[in-house]
Length: 315
Image (cartoon, rainbow, N blue to C red; front, side, top):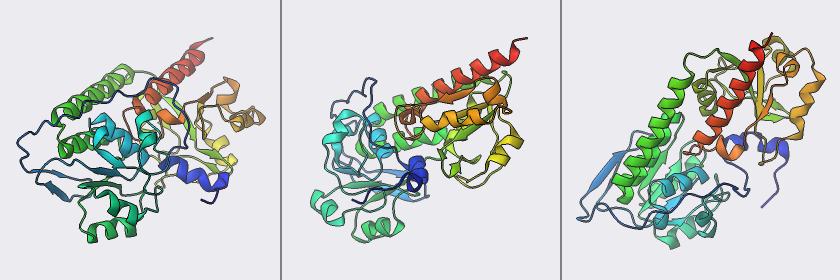
């Protein structure tokens, strides 16, 4: 596969996460037990509004995005996955599963060989042509598009229902939503902190107000200074940053290491974020995938915004 240049990976970083090892404890796999022993017909409505019906729980599942793979494991369906895409590196068990292509280009022949009873595709990440072709071939295709923090719970629950793990998936989804609600409650009365999230340095790129990371910043009591942008990952300029003057700058980069280019902001000492030493890093594994690990990234951001508040309160 042709190696992508850093600039070409900017949008890709928001869609998928680069393959890197996870240092924290992996998700534990649930036993491959089916909560629907009578194998009665089941159905859900996917993110595209389609009714997805199965005569019995899917026992052979292909997931066409790394975050979908992770959500399948969270839903209790990890043992039913028979195919994944590149960069599906979490939990550890996902690394040994057959690869059926990349996030945009799928290997139809390989999928045909795997004979999946359910394919979970990503509306904005997978090629629409590939999705349509899979449907034309007669496969049952669930369209996933978790654009908000709460949507992650629906994704997990729907996969759990379709795979026969409704009880387990419901518990995981509810625990996730409860923790989100607790975080929001803890931060709702705190001082707002103007925040700039940097996707990449060249070109200089950020996130718009509808992005899930913007949602994560807001739940911590932050305000995305580019919330008025409608584009998913708008390209901006230095002059715009200087004018909006964020209190904090948050970056993720492409690995678990703090990106070197985050320190480039020291060239602009007039920025409040630089003056108060509020140049922060959050692990991309915990903020750029639409999974329950978002809770870890949110916890990091909330802590960083609290640090900024403390500095602002000092005489």
